Structure formats: structure tokens, C-alpha cells
Length: 112
Length: 117
Image (cartoon, rainbow over all chains, first blue to last red; front, top):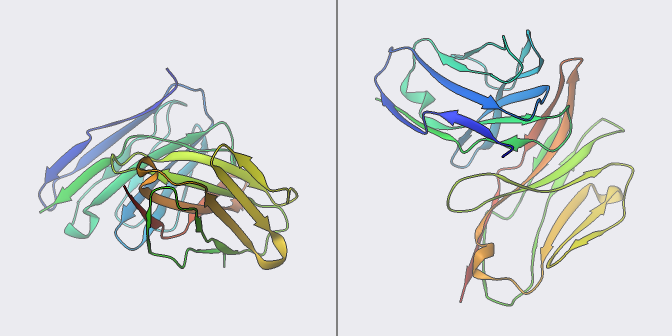
């Protein structure tokens, strides 16, 4: 089944404890992206990647890192999480851009 | 700057009513794409439609229809004979060309549709 998977789906952590949210797609898509969704703000792009080793910042990259060492994986790294990073995070992929993006199920992160 | 405005924050209708969700966009690009996504209470994002800037034909898919008007920079979404299962948050989005790395989706803030029986 074609899909985008994210892990974990739910995470509660404390300020400053490094964490990684994994994202993987099995559709051989070139384009992958991370978004965060906050009430009243909609979805905002954090980082995106057009292909392996090609990444760039979106609208709200501060406090986040990404890597794209393999085509299928695009992990989101929070080196030192803070409470303002409490949010719902979505990973998405598409064959190229700006095609239809397939979204993962979301990761709900709470930083205490 | 690219921008998507969904002026209706919340809409409540009774089953079988028709409802239109408005989307107005701003862009400097001559070639762009518009999207609608649905987010049901379960939280996932479901793709509904993509439309490019050169195709102004209206589209109908079952009870869903979309009206794209370049002259008014609008891409409105109508649900005919709404059902309870249509209750969701609906997002309109615009593709923004970034650089050779690709494009980003600029999302509106969403319209929450509640359909009661």
C-alpha cells in the first residue's frame, strides 16, 4: 500500500531533550516536506527536500533540522525542543512538486 | 507575497443543505497550482483536487464541485446535499515556486464545516 509513515504518532517530552520524528514513504517520491499545524494558523512548512541531499528551509525552520540521506526517509530533528514547538507535525511527499502531496498520519508533540 | 485566505472560519449546516467554502489567493506567479484538502476529525489530510492556473474549467466530482475564477483569484468549493460525513476542516492551498529545490504549499487557515443531522 502506498503510504507515508511517521513515528512516533504521539510524543510527550521535556524541554531540551533531543528528539527525532521519522518519516518514510514507499512511493519513490522525490519531493518530501515537513509541516506543522497549529490552531488558527493552519499548516506551515518547516523544511522541504527535492531529492537526496537537497534540502531547504520553509517558513518556520527555526529550532528544526532535517536530513535526506535516502530517498525514502526524511527525519525531522529537534535538537533542543521548547514548549513553543508543541504542535501537530505532518510529513508529506509527492512525485515532484507541485503535484498532489501525500500526507502522513501526523505526530502530535507536546514539549513540557 | 503568496497568500491564501479562507474568510469563513466555521460553517454550520443541516444535512442536505448545499454549502460553499470560499478561497481567495494572491500570487505573483503566472503559473501556479491550487489545491483543496480535507481534514476529518481523525486528523489525516486527504487530497481532494489540484487545479493549474491555465485550466479554468469548473470541475464536478459527485457531490463536490469547484469553481476557479482567475479574474477574482478565487477557487471556491461547493458541497451539494451535504452529509454528516462531510464534517471536517477544509484547507485551500496554493503552490509557491521557491527555487530549484521545488515548490511549497501555502495553506489557508482552514474552514471548519459542521453538518448536523
